[in-house]
Length: 124
Image 1 (cartoon, rainbow, N blue to C red):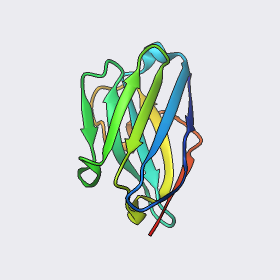
Image 2: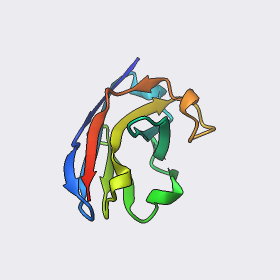
Image 3: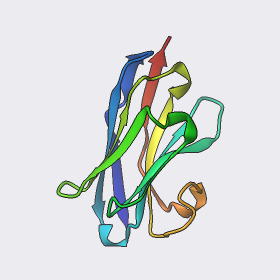
């Protein structure tokens, strides 16, 4: 089993920045990719960004490209999401998740380990 713990959420004004971190522990040798997802109030959980454990492949939701950056720290087994130029529509609970599968990086169903989530609120 892989344990994931998110941190770094909070309140930020529109145009501001926040950095989320996801710490992975446990059977991390089984992880192929770590993804960030978000769920807005009343909405479905949706893909935001993903990075392979090796760091060799990165994918972003179109609406966050150029504003969000996903990265990994191999020494700490952490996966960060740097969010800049934030918009009110970025308000959501953000989750990190891991999968051992190489395909379908944006598909929620392939991710089998999830963190507890961290709230991000962007005020206008």
